[in-house]
Image (tube, rainbow, N blue to C red; front, top):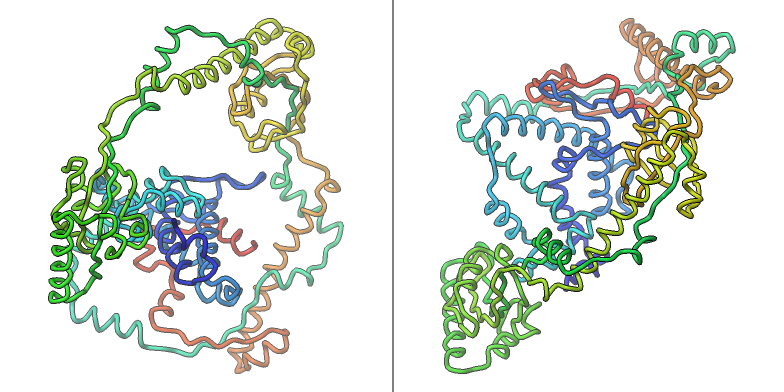
Length: 573
């Protein structure tokens, strides 16, 4: 199954198919979740502000990275820096994030929602998730896994995309276009101008900046808060791992029953059927005469099935669904919402052994044979006993680990004596390195609850145990380094780089102003560029592009303001 995944390197068509699935949602995904940047990243940086709501710089970076990866997957070795520049990925990313934010605002204003049925239908109709015209859950999950997504993420992205599509439809419904507007748009797209220019990037002037100890000291004195070191702490801790106590767990029949009743969703039996089909495929746009011929052929096959011919053999010879044809038309088991609506409605209205009439869908004509039907329900305690025991044992082991951690906390919290607690519980005492409020704790990870508690914790005190994915953590403060302004020598490299960047901007601006003055006196741009050892470029610019260069306050950005801080960062990186 999913041969195109196994052979993905062989066909550019396949790569584009994957790209189409994900490219539709890379923007929405960034708007749905805000992943943290690397340690030290300014989480408050803004790429843009739309109607008073910030688009985080991290979202811009994440979305740009996703977009970059999509195009890289499509073009492979042909994806050069020149092509990246030509595609204007950074501009596309910011434009799309702004558009998405505006559309989401409008959706909230109009109280637009997407029903569960609309979501299921939309996903089932995505061709990349179908095998010969029929939705395949296996293909769906495999395609998502290839893109490192789970179904919950993708469905949230799809819901967001459907909402914004509804907004677009509503906005476009009342739009009228006059002849004057058509004429204006034609001129915008067709009037051209040839532009010569020289690019003076500040980075190219950094080597010209003269750095002296006196200048650095003055700059550092003025900007020392920029280089302030935040408060850092380190911990001593004990890790109570539930698996350590799994053999100490006991339970009775009553507890098994309670666990089963508390977790009924884990033992749910979904309504499903096992079916086979014969597909006579009809491509979109096929003329009516050909459609009638194919329908007649499907009806002929149905008569042969009803006359007693072997369904599986007819499917092997005649079905256009090649994936299932080799299995005699067998589609396996599927639940409601897995197939396109006409197919689903026909199949779930049948009984095991029934043969359908000819069913028409967007993919052609189907003959369906239902083989098994599973009613919805919940597996009994007896049927799911092994799973219940495993789940209850793990649950009680976690509870036991937490109880032991709490006992250690209550006994030692006034003295903060972790060594005594370690000895009593036969655990090794662990230590972390220094970390800040946005940092990473050695052996524990980025746990906000522990990080916040650690910075508030007094010396010789224990913090209350915290449950993590790696066990229950009982911890005490090992060391605290207060926030302070470092000595210049400690951060000299950082100060030097910042000073050079600032002075390089001044040099670039001064050079540009000098060149403008020379041009006003009749100088040649090409000669000036040569004198400055710069390349001059030519650009053919449409009228619409000229207008955008004149003012960023164009109609599409009327409700968006760009943050100069984040734009400086994007230029520097």
